[in-house]
Image (cartoon, rainbow, N blue to C red; front, side):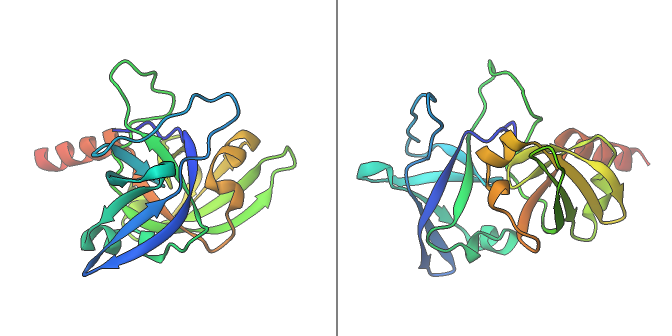
Length: 204
């Protein structure tokens, strides 16, 4: 379980094809000045741009590997990663942690895209995202959504699109600061909302 508050970014070193799957190699996390260092442990679960992956190898210098199954490659954009690309990282939450974002499982519900972005004239940017068909049922005004593992608040949802005002600090700390129109994004709907939907469907 995660909270959608990105802790670090890491550069992709290599995407190594392995049969129907792949092994993703990342460089050591890039930390903010003054941020305490941390090293992933073997077997630890990390959110890699919103996708929950397990650390499968650690080498000298912090080089870290994650194995990607055929299912993961089919449901995410991770299979298109190239060396030099940057991804968001978050460690799993502890029960004693503050929940600064919202409950995020790291299970991608679909791949959407950045339909448009514009300068919001305050140092931030206004993003318009387009979601895959079926995801729009979780688009509620002021509800939470995870985009590439980042906890964001939905603004003005309309059919299969919604907007998000991203502040300068989020742009600086996450991959959204490097994003361009047309880029694919991992989407995860609000976990509590999905459970409510499932329970109500069963009662009907």
